[in-house]
Length: 372
Image (cartoon, rainbow, N blue to C red; front, side):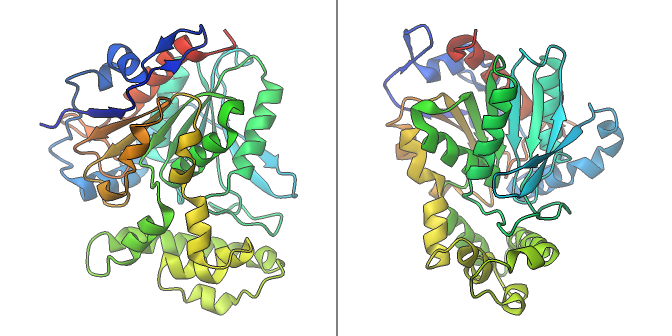
């Protein structure tokens, strides 16, 4: 069985006490799920990348009764500077004005009800973290209140949310956890912020890294199972546009609602709608600009990336291994199995992802929390 492998730079990074510590060594020593010799063993009932991916997306329904026992969210409607709005789903712990706050960005079709999101925030609450799931504007049935839609590299919304949370809870360390498209946005944001990033640490799961190549990969899967993911994302995008087109079409751009509705792939949809809404010359230009791999060199806080070799969406050939070998602030943990943000282990299918998430955050809070 494949041991979890860490890819990292040879240089140590600077901690809050000015002592240079090797991030990979800290992970090996203080995160049992990622220690030397650690393995993620997929459940025999959910074997392979496609099964892991599909099971995780269906997990909310499979474990619906269990989910009823989860901590309940309180919804805040957050207003952005352009008049747009989006839901923030909060689960506050005791002494929440001083305890860590874990901010979560999910995938393109994700919500606070996603199985993997629920498992992570349940574990966070046990450790006296507050959590807030930051959802995208115009998604999950929530209507846009301004013309600007979301896209895979739009970091301004998350930036405004973080600034607001930091001002409201100045004594609470901020943490970032993200999945899939949210992983791309969070990575890009952390790189853009550089030394000024207000997060203490981040965890990036199932990151696409290169949005243009990932979308080309999905759009090309005409006669393979991966076509299911392509069509699911495309239908989500089309429905989001249909629900909000009265707002989006206020943008002074030559968008044709009929052509958008007839898009046969994600790239075509991006060409017909998204790139025009944001003023890019082509879909490729928008996606290249949005790809977080271009911002990873500028990350200055400790960030753990987690990818699996059998991920059918964010495939191995798109992982920028060279970035992890040159920036001492980032580490890649690579597993053999897990699919796309699946990670169902045990004999009976049981979520694994929440364990390395909490272990890493607990460790980083001890080493790099400047609010202590």
